[in-house]
Image 1 (tube, one colour):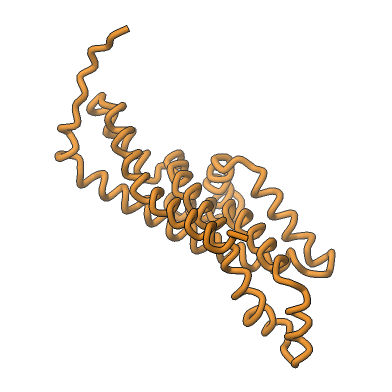
Image 2: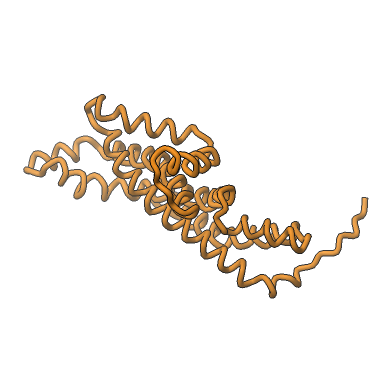
Length: 222
């Protein structure tokens, strides 16, 4: 069946500044959420490796709740519960960043847990035998070795996080997907607009995928 759809991308020059601004906002959400989620993941991942069951209990509960709950539900939940229950009124941008950070922080925690656990126990014991404290062993011996094994999973996590930034559009954050809907309602060129923003996402994701694959080959070739 033939179609006579008239493809038209001439609108890009007129709306380019709007999309660039939205792309910048998407990048801000990505960078902030990635930074906070890795910070959360490091702290929680260390606790998950504790020898004490009570110390592991709350971090494990956090990981399971935030890993297994749909992200879009978490975004709406934070958007509604923070002002209603705690009287904390943040703008939509920061609400979205917080929701993404807690969700991906749970995934990062699992990566840190596995990376730390993957360091041979004998190296920790040897470091303690020469007088290092547990904190020094973690910082100087365990994490430097674990980080190389974690680079590839973190690369993949960033790719998924970049794609999931589009979900903050449900609370009105003017990122790429939100702007595409707005422009699409004016121009009735939704197919072209979706192709265009897909290309903008790929500009970030393709290098991330390449780096992630390279690191996976380099550090996990054995």
